[in-house]
Image (cartoon, rainbow, N blue to C red; front, side, top):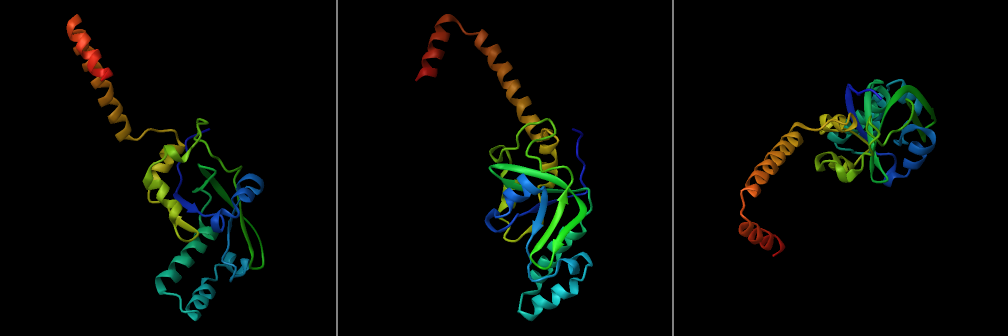
Amino acid sequence: MENISPSKVLFIKLGSAGAWEEECIEKEQTLRIGFNEFEHDDCIAGKWDIVRTYYKSIGTLPRWITTYINQLQYFYEADENTLWITFYKQKMWWCFATKKFIGQGKELKLRKVKGKWQSTDINGKDLFVENLSGELLQTQGYPSTICEVKAANYAVKKINGEELPEVLKVKEVVQSLRNSLSFLVKKLTPKDFEVFVDLIFR
């Protein structure tokens, strides 16, 4: 698999408490959102004034109106080079989506995935959450449906199987320490070595 180079990285929450995760990831290979107040066809047509008018009518704060419209725009307008990520079964999953939408009325808003959802890097290594940074995992706590990923560069590097410069630097330092300790151990006399071993076991 080739390296990815997305135009944008977005997180999507697949249903309340992950209600659509299994269906979208394991069965349908889709993205899905709710926003059941609005017609699928109106969203495809970009009639965002309808969304704004509705939220104003129920007293939604202006900043949240903007947030909700942004999420709908992400879903319907993001290009096919946008990387989508989510978290499911203790792994990070990722995909790219086509511009093919499947929907009906207000309650069904789907977007087809290119190929399928992936939970490994391009080298086939599982993307377990315990091996991901806290900054990226914080995205799981986003209170709504779709948001831009702040740790986008990190997410792309993990998928591409690349190590961060900071990690490489630490490995170099550790290796340097090992080399130095090896040199010092060789200088120990038999008596020094006995004391050294005794200290280790203590």
